[in-house]
Length: 59
Image 1: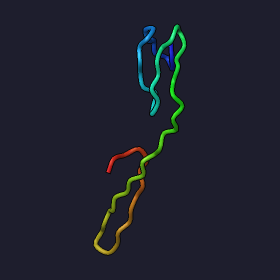
Image 2 (image 1 turned 180 degrees about the horizontal axis):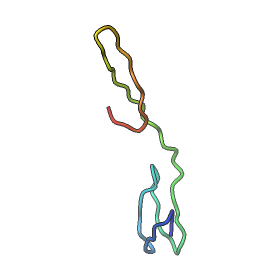
Image 3 (image 1 turned 90 degrees about the horizontal axis):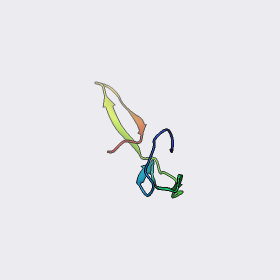
């Protein structure tokens, strides 16, 4: 069991940016740090524009 989910021995799965494998009851995962993507878009009114940043989105 890993984070509340049960996997079969030898089964592979993703955990965020990491690849994991169930190995004899233990979850063995890579240790890759996930990079956040920062996106912005402009909202315009008649006289001004401003922008907002959102994490984990695609531009």
